[in-house]
Image (cartoon, rainbow, N blue to C red; front, side):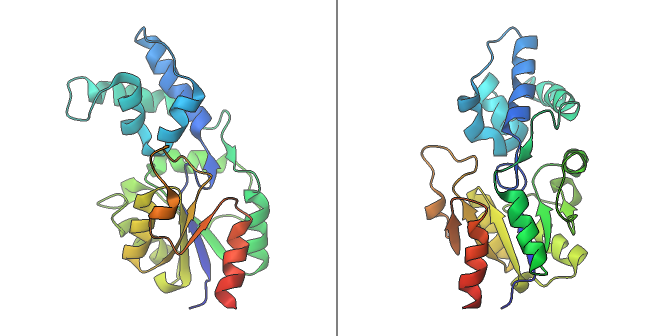
Amino acid sequence: MKTTCILFDLDGTLIDTAPDLGYALNCLLEENDKKPLEHDVIRPHASRGARGLLKIGFDIEEEDPGYETLRQRFLAIYETNVCRESRLFDGMYEALAALSERGLDWGVVTNKPAWLANPLMAQLTFPTPPACVVGADQVPRPKPDPAALILACELTGHAAENCLYVGDAKRDIVAGRRSGMRTIAVRYGYIAEDDSADQWGADWVIDTPAEMLECLVAEAA
């Protein structure tokens, strides 16, 4: 099986979005007369989106009264601040350039809705454009369901067995395996202290974006 396309989770894998997600949460907390949270408290929960961030900020669940009002306000704040400080993780630009030099396509499959993911991607610079950006609002069910990854294969023209999916959460690895892709888990992402990328069943586990290239070399050996 030859890899022809690398697909990435967005938050915590391709792009460090925690500063802007945290900014939106802290703005919302201040609007509600609550104390802002430190970045180190917010970061491990960033890839869980509004649900996870509202949980740590307000101790509120989706079924609780007032949740939807808070969620909509959080999303409104975040939408207008989607790329204040968000950046590619260190070494990711160079890794993407190296993948492109090998003739590989790359794309994004995220549980972020496309109406947030696309504006964020548009404000960042990449060595080559993504072959696809698939958001959770484009499929019936989010990851760990494989629907978004299957759609990415349809959009890019690459078979699942020729794709690698890279993510910083167990749901990413589960979705990748269910879709028929090989998977890479990243330790540098938004992972809680009581969790471990080494326990998710990925084909490879890496500490830096550059190590993706080593996985491809090992695969071809």
